[in-house]
Length: 277
Ligand SMILES: Cc1cc2nc3c(=O)[nH]c(=O)nc-3n(C[C@H](O)[C@H](O)[C@H](O)COP(=O)(O)O)c2cc1C
Picture 1 (spheres, rainbow, N blue to C red):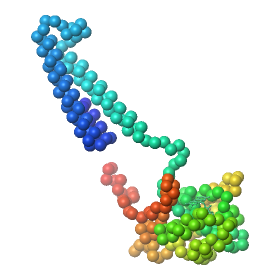
Picture 2 (picture 1 turned 90 degrees about the vertical axis):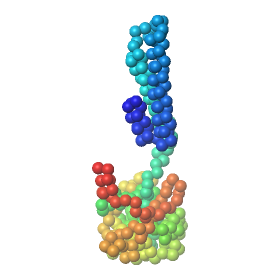
Picture 3 (picture 1 turned 180 degrees about the vertical axis):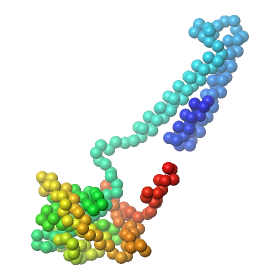
Picture 4 (picture 1 turned 90 degrees about the horizontal axis):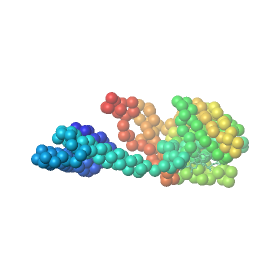
């Protein structure tokens, strides 16, 4: 009975409440069934001078009961394993099409060789150290500009500028040299690096190139060293820290090609986990 109980506890942790109730009912039924069978066999064994089959000739009542309990345990074990394999088979493999989340929507701003500002949307990137940011860039005007200037700025696309941010990802400066102006945005020259800062985005980091690794196809893996970050006052909290709730940065949902907003606070880092220590 104890074994049945612990098996049910195990099942309860893995499956839903209804499944567990069914297992408990089945366990109880099994238990009483075993007892009844034993009682029945006991009667036959004691009342009849005939042996209960040749194999059971010397088996005492207790041993018989034990055999049936073990049989029950085996049945329960099989059911449990079957349930487990059913659960495993509900997972679907996607090969290497991984949805790593969140992918931030980053707007890289650069100058071309004539000093014309350009902006592009890059979601395949992110912070890769306390002072570094990385990108995987294909062959774009931006890639060429970074190669030449060894500098760029990165703004965080926010809920307020979804349309402009997407536009920067679907139109190249090679076809539309005035793309920033066309999006209704303006730039200022960074005080720290040779790159433009897009004024309308509330949070921007200014970077110089630390690594520029050509991919042989005109693209590159880029790592930028952050030399400064500037933020609008209206996205700061009362202590002067960046408030992501106020910034409302967006992320790229690569599974559905959606932009989603990041913001709701759901816990405290380095402290919530202590509840189960
Ligand atoms: C959501 C989104 C994410 C993108 N992420 C990247 C990226 O990480 N790397 C990249 O090379 N291109 C990326 N692109 C494509 C470029 O933003 C796009 O080709 C852009 O027009 C290049 O502009 P440019 O030629 O003016 O530099 C992305 C586009 C979108 C819409």
